[in-house]
Structures are given as structure tokens and as C-alpha cells.
Image (cartoon, rainbow, N blue to C red):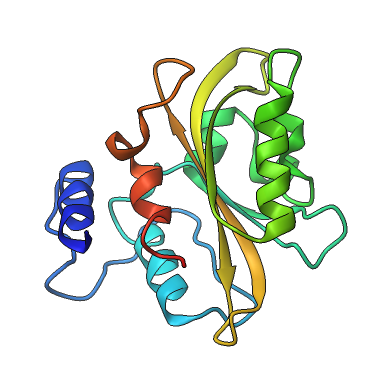
Length: 181
């Protein structure tokens, strides 16, 4: 499975993955964890912080804080949603929901957070200007070396339509699947 993930990453970013040399840090904002995270999650964060991943829409939330607020939003997330990081960080992600967001999709995310497990859901959300977008949303726990939950990472991948069957074709699947038990 790892070779197929590497192939998908290589196709997405147009570079060989895993890289043969050290990762080059991107010039965009980067998530620097304030808490210790396990090695496999460090690899995930290093990849997101590296050159070629600047436009990946993702955010990191802290489950130890009240209402699990966003503590980091990538430049890609801000561009995708129309919000600035200052408007987003400190808030729960539910501000993206609107009248057309299905309750069963939100419930699936809430249950995964409660159970501290990864999940994905195809859902309708809303940008700052009120326009809708469909995204394949991937949620994964980030843990410390003792397997204690320290963060959740959410990767938002734009897709053409609501419905299943789009997971392996987009970057969120690569960033979350196979990296967590």
C-alpha cells in the first residue's frame, strides 16, 4: 500500500515521493506543533510543511481546548474558504456549515472526534462569501509517542459533486490513510 500512496503523492505534486533528499520547507505558513507528536505524525506534518504542498487546504484543531478550536489553518485552507487565518483560528470548524450541510455528515464527524478515530465524509460547506463548495473531508487524530490524542487534522479536498467514490483520487486520502491505526 505504501508504494501506491507514494505513487499518488508523486502524481499530485509532480515530484518523486518519498523524496530522495531532505524536504525543502515551503514559503507559506507552516504548522509547528506546540505538543509532542509521534514520529509518523511528524512525517505527515513535515510533508505538509514542505515545498509543493502550499495549496493543500487543511487545518489542525486542539481537542484539549474548549470546543476543539482550530489552532492552525493552512494558506490553502484560507484560499479555499475565503477566510483569513486570523478569522478562523480559535473557532470550531462548524462555521463552514450551512443550511445545505447534511446532519448525518456532521454527525459522522462528531462521532469520529468522540471516538478519536479517522474518518472521511463528502459534504457541502460554505465559503466566507456564502457560496457553497463540495469537499471530501478527511479527519485524522494526531497522537504523541504514548498514543495520546493531541490534535486532529482535517484535510479538505475540493471535489466535483456530493457522493462516494472520490477518496483515492484526491490528496486528502493520501495525507490521512495509512498514517494512523
